[in-house]
Every structure is written in C-alpha cells, then in structure tokens.
Image (tube, rainbow, N blue to C red; front, side, top):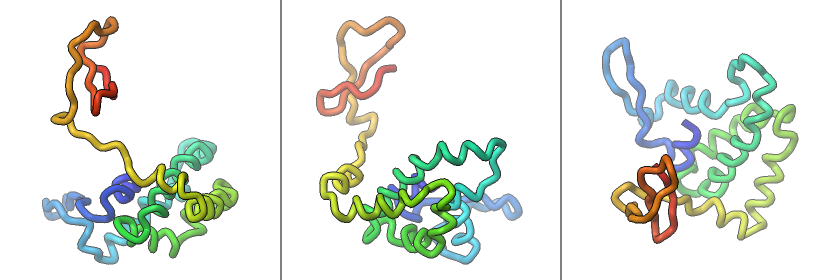
Length: 153
C-alpha cells in the first residue's frame, strides 16, 4: 500500500466491504480511511513471526520515504503529513537509528540524489518491442524499451 501511495498518492485505492458487498474508495478521507492509511505506514508496529525481520525492512521503508520526501509538495503531500504526525512510530529509533533524518538532509541538499527518486521507469507492454534474435535456452522472448533489453520471458 505504501508503494502505491508513493506513486499514485492516496487516490485510486479501494477496499471491499464484505458486510454490505460494496467496493469503497479509500480516497473519501473518512476517519476510518485515515486509520487504514496509518496502519499501512506503521510497518514496524506489525505482528511478525520473527521480530528480527523488522531490521530487514529498514532499507525498503527508507527507499519509500525518499519518494515521499521528493514528492511531498505534490502527489505524496497527504502521505507526508501523516508520516510527520506519527514520525516516531513510522521510524522507530530502535530500527531506523536516525537514518530517516539523514535521508531528509541528504534529499534536501544533494540534487543528484533527489533526482534519482524523481523519475521511475514506466512502460507498458504496448511500448515493448520483442527482439527477433537468438535467445538463450529457456527464454521465449526478449523485450526492449528504447532499444534496451528490459525483460526476458
């Protein structure tokens, strides 16, 4: 969910209410929806079979947060506000050890680093061109975007 919110904001997200059999838009911004969004970013508050796995998620969470910081005046504004309101729970010191603050500082002062998070690779299958060449064993087709191989099937 956090990944979707980084790329699309808090729009175009839905949940199925089984009690009444209706698909509901989370973008309606009710208090219940805000709780859902909050639950989505409080990754370290989740129940884990092995709590040591939380440490393995630090890089992922910081990567997602870099996108939020980069787009905080636009697509991720509401998400950033929610993170700031619950900052200590989103980035518990026990796991993050100040890296979220370091990331913010780096993103605000390093233009090259900030640019890395600004333009994700996006393509659709209609933009992909199959290559007609000798393919490695087990590969049925190779596709390119702008002449660069991106996927082998």
